[in-house]
Length: 383
Ligand code: F6P
Image (cartoon, rainbow, N blue to C red; front, side, top):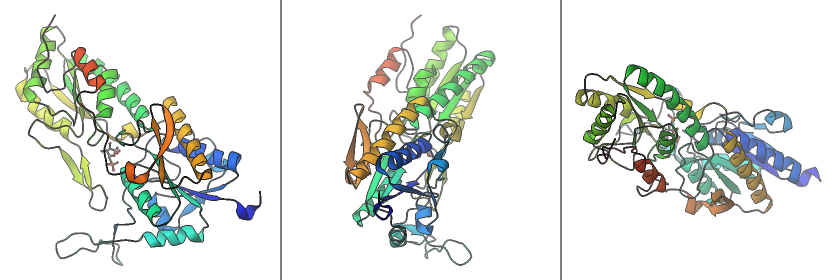
């Protein structure tokens, strides 16, 4: 192929990391090079790299050995919305208005100039809702953009699945196995807090897979009395220990979510966290003195490590399909998977909604049938 006419593709990984990002970069790059003969570069730290024109060429050598690894060789940032970008003074401090709010401005044209300067035909954004919203906005400004959905939370409404979720569930399930043995030995109630923001998918899947006794989800508010009843029901059956999996976004009936911190310069500023500690203090006062209640927060362990085989395959499919979309010039759309089939959807239909658990979801019923409590009702006491 004539080098002058070679398409030049840029990839960036926006938002938090998720196992499978490297596998998508690998599959996309390999397909771009082998099948279509494109050049590929990668912007570092998501949209920050695009703003600073900070990139690396991606070649066979760059991606050698990355397929199975978590994280991203392009690094991640969840702080760089170029359409609403925090202003800093010459000392590196945020500029604030009279109410103390950070002053923000639109710097997207700087990024567009960089893309033009580097002769980029198509920008491929691997990201969650925030990064894909920016992808949509760049697309509206005339840039050829293709999205690939990423999040361990599995909460993007346009796609049935995102890579990273399966690996996170496997990690939590393994941790629950370890927690079980110590909970049993000490006759403790152990509350395991898992990620997911406003969606309880990680808690629901790992809770069932890891044999939790109680699963608390953002979608089903709980009452303390029902959790206590489940613990006592187990006591009566000669099981004086219990495992509670709580999603970071879960809340008591009539209560609020527990916020860990506000990250002011992040587009999605609220970081949930702390529910396991709060619940542990509350439960310890309500149950028999025979049990200690201990909180365990799994945190970023859920995003790290090696990518599961399932997520590697899903990522390879997404990466290869994104390359096909570039070739077919299907810009302004995101790869998605519906009932096992790969397809794509326009950004406008993809962003701004969350895929939450319907309380009538089949898995909820499966769990209830097995006596798992969601803290919203008493469980039947049967021998
Ligand atoms: O969206 C992925 C996720 O890991 C959430 O489950 C969690 O609430 C959040 O990101 C944590 O963000 P950070 O890594 O910025 O603390």
